[in-house]
Structure formats: structure tokens, C-alpha cells
Image (cartoon, rainbow over all chains, first blue to last red; front, side, top):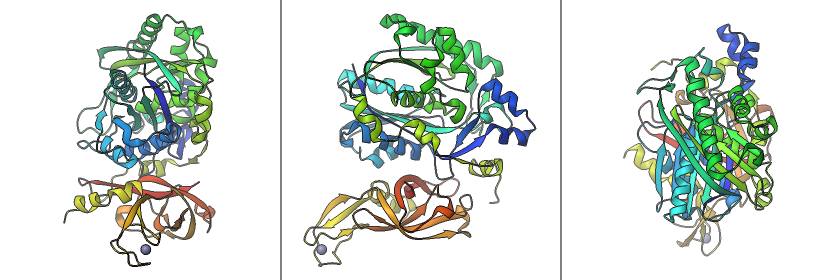
Length: 347
Length: 130
Ligand SMILES: [Zn+2]
């Protein structure tokens, strides 16, 4: 089976607090903080997007992987906020890291699941022997409509993984996928902000797909929650991953290292992948990690990883995910509105 | 000449900091050139510049071109990379009162500009504090 050879994350420096957003819309900040378990979220600068964050996260992944980028045979960027409607993000990334021209590029989109999708496909191509190394990125600079509940969580960040044939820092033990047609969240063409089906995004959507995927995968590999050192779920807010973990029989301690959403927000395609990079930052050789993504529309990709002894040698050669989260500057709603182009400008 | 073509020709320098070293005297050039200004030779070896450097001088732009109004005010600096090449670029993610000659900076990949609402997006290098 394939393995993760190198990994890296990237988070823009700007943060906005829940209180700052709530103040503008006359909302009750304490109830959002309690209800969604969110404190603050990351905000990209005007010169940052999915492409720039992917490049920076990948530089960190390459520093850990120590491979020749020209040997990367596939570059897959998963996002729902690709900067162009038509023109790939992947070619810019591939060019920036020196992987062109003998490389296959594709941009993936599946709400918040596009990043794990890229990982899934890279693992398949590596296992089939079609490529030596694959680069999988999950990144987003998502937006919630002003005053919508999503505005409190929609954040920006990226995670990047070099997938290869040797076990690397974490061996892929098995994968599993669970999909159904569930219209819980969507954005139509030319619409600026997504729409969601309120409470319908919970039980029949997020919880059903993640629990089904996690259960199916654990049965497939004959493991139970207590066999895992850590577990990472998609994090649309702070509360959902904690609740789904409890439903499946995982402890707070197993969820904790990859539970970034309270201080990061929901980075959509980057969400569970960044949870994994933060978990790899603290994992020890021999640790088993379960990761289950979730993308609206809807589906979950599940992965079981076993951390190898190579982790200790690469962990500190690039910045850790929480180290990146610690570098921050708080901005006000006005700056946030300007950076996210919520202000209508003159022609 | 379209913007696309001009931008595209600079991709190796803009994205990957590809430069050249004179094969006879060792002087480094960024962007690459045809004739060495040190010794007049015309043979060069491709090199990749270091991602790290230090700030030589800077200014803060408070009245910028209208296309940069979202980022104004912003800092511009001349940075000497480890290896000696000097380049001019924006210094992003910096509090202006921490700007200091000699401060260590590193390269980050950023969006440099947009060709209006419908044109291409131009990417390249900026510097951020270490
Ligand atoms: Zn010369």
C-alpha cells in the first residue's frame, strides 16, 4: 500500500473573532461560541487564494518528503474556491514547485471533500504503479453569506500530502468511501455564496455519512475505536466533530490534536486534511490514525494510517500546523469585508 | 503583445526564482541575461535562488495604484537573498513598526495582481517576516 511521504499545511495570518462578526449583525456571540464551539476563524489577505496557499503548504510537504519534485506524476488540488472558473489551479502549483511538464493535473471539487478525494486518487495511482509520487492538496478560501451562520465558520487554509510507494511517515492501511445524493449544501453557477438546508445539514448529511464511512472502514480492517491513537473528522464547526466522535465511541483525547476548527474555522476542502497534518505533528511511530472527511452533496472518504518511525525525523523540519495557527493578527469586520470583497467598488 | 504572453515568459523567475550564474566569473543574475556584466561572457548555468534573505531598505506605499487599493498601505523593500542577489518586492504580513533594515525575510508565493475582473491572475514572489 501507499504511504504519506511528506505533509504540510498553510494558514493565512489574519483572524476574525466570532464577537466581531456577531457585533455587526446584532447576533448573540456567546450563543454562537457555545452552540458551534467556535472562537475565531482565519481570513485570507487579498493576495492569497487557493493557489498561493497550495504552493506554500506543498513547500512544507516537500521539505518533509525530500524528493525531487520532477518525480511527482500527479498534482491534484481539491477545492470549492478554485480562483478561476475555467483554468486549473493544479498547473500553477505544479509549475511553482517544478513538477512540470511530465505530470498529470486535475482540479477536484466536492464541497468539503475535494481534498481527501485528491488523496484517495493519488493513493490509487501509486498502488497501481502508474505514478511514483502524487501530490494531493485540499485548500479553500470559502465564504459564507453575510449574517448567515456560515459566515462565522467559513475560513481559509490548505494541507498538502506527497503520496508515494514506500511507507513514508504514515502507511495507508486501507481506504473506504460512502456516498449518497443528499442536497444539504450547494452553490449554483454564478452565485457568489452557497446555500444550505439548515438543520438538514446535520443528521441525514454530516452524521450519517461520517458514521457510515467510519463504521464501514473499521469493519473492513477489523479495528475498533480503541485501536486508534487519534481520529480526524471533517470540521464544519467545533461541535460536529466532537459529537460524531462520541457517537462512534471515540474519546475527546483521540480527537483533540486534529480538532482545529474552534480557532481556525472550517477550511472546507482543507478541513480534515489539516486535522491530519496537526495530528501527524504529534503522532508517534506505531500510532493508528482514522481520518473521515465529509463533503456535502454528499459523501465521506475514510483512511486508516499507521504512523512509521520516519515521523520523528521529518516532524520539525517544516512548521507544524498549530505553530502556523499561532501566528496571527486580528482584523475588524471592515477589513474583513474589504479583504473578502464584500464591498461593492466603483468601476 | 498580450499580457498572458509577457507573464508566461517570466514564470520560471516569478514562480521558482530561477536565475543564472556566469560560467566564467560566477556572478549571479536575476532575471537571467544574455551577457555577463562582470566579465562579458555569454555562458551561464541555471541556479535556483535561496528563499531567505535580509531587508536592505524599504518604504511604505500609502497612496498606491487603484488596483492595489485593497492592500494599501503596503510595504515595498529591496531584499538581499542569501547568495547576494538583490530583488525588489512587496513585504506582506508585516506590522510596519517592526520593519527594520537587516530583518530576516523569506519568500512566499502570492497573487501579485489581477488583470481586471475578467483577465488572468498573475502570481509571483513576495517577502514575509521569518
Ligand atoms: Zn561573468
